[in-house]
Length: 295
Image 1 (cartoon, rainbow, N blue to C red):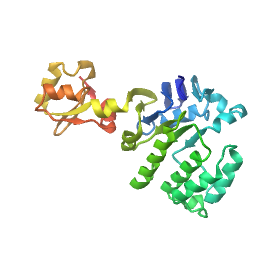
Image 2 (image 1 turned 30 degrees about the vertical axis):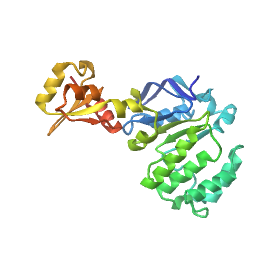
Image 3 (image 1 turned 90 degrees about the vertical axis):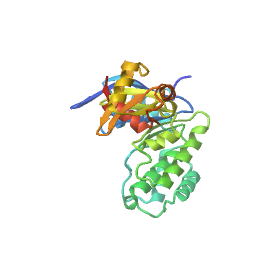
Image 4 (image 1 turned 45 degrees about the vertical axis):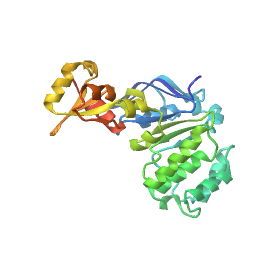
């Protein structure tokens, strides 16, 4: 089965930054979390996939259509099937929420005005309120309602839960779960709120300085790997044991000890029961991968 969203060798050069040979794929039924530090290349990758910027190399495709075609009239039918939420509300500030619905109705043949009105009510969006008067969180709710109301097949979300309070984030994640549960759906979701990705993502792709540094099933990170809390003597003993292969021994030193990335926390606990080994979070894994030393 071909991926619903795919990047192959995406390359884009700017002064002071380059996206280099980026590969990722989102299959039907998947939620792929896309993570990285600010300026790592997440938004550039998303814009390249959507055909919003011209590439210097490689290719992208969404629903089988090349990304560069999405920016042409011939790509309009495919864009009907793609819901997008950027990290800022890209609507004129003077428009009211109800005006936004009318404009989108003219833009999308598949626009469902009843669905938009229902989503606006459920998300507590005041139809008479101007976009410029919405808080960031309410603006993101409006963007999500717009992305869902034309019945897309894939969602591409760039920090879509940013600015939402915890209850609103829970509600948004529930909607995304319902969306991807239907056949033929997929989500690519960039987020700094990795706890959201721990709840909803199937895979995690991390980019740093324009390069993909890991692409792993989320359960491998949160269920299989661990973070060992070592003292200096413990660390030397672990390093010498071979339980963690030398090429995989990544660590971060702190004033109170050394954190070690453990590929198999269960095997580690059997060999070193006296050393605390915590369950890994996505944030921990990213920090150890990007900032950790290598033995």
